[in-house]
Image 1 (cartoon, rainbow, N blue to C red):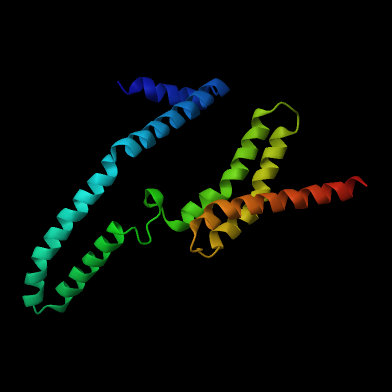
Image 2: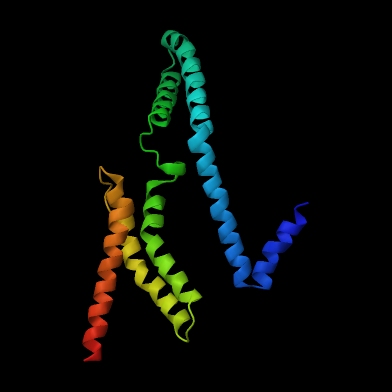
Length: 184
């Protein structure tokens, strides 16, 4: 049952075709979009999260009386650590979408415009497009690295939308100005 799927992906690598790649990208977007629509309509995952949090809170509450009577300091520390973890989980403190580490989310955000442009170069016809795609990836290394080191702003849109757009525009401006001066 799974072997046709494995063969399909194997053919994508051994017998590469743009049609297969586009098919995988389109199917991935459709699957992701369907999952987002399902969650936004039913709230299934959010309600499961609330249910789990409530059950754990109830269990912690029952344990709190036993912990208060216990003289072992380690058990008390473990209890408070678990309680703090549940608080962070239930109140979304320090948790990013999909529970990704913040540095990874900033990396993906900063890399997105560069990856899109590199793919556009690869898909367009021309002799030097592969070189341009690799040049785009090379030019993206410094802005992506700076995006990772950016401090976390109170509004995450600055980290995940504002900076990628600004850095991409700034590098394009620098490239435009340097190529304009070289042509003169």
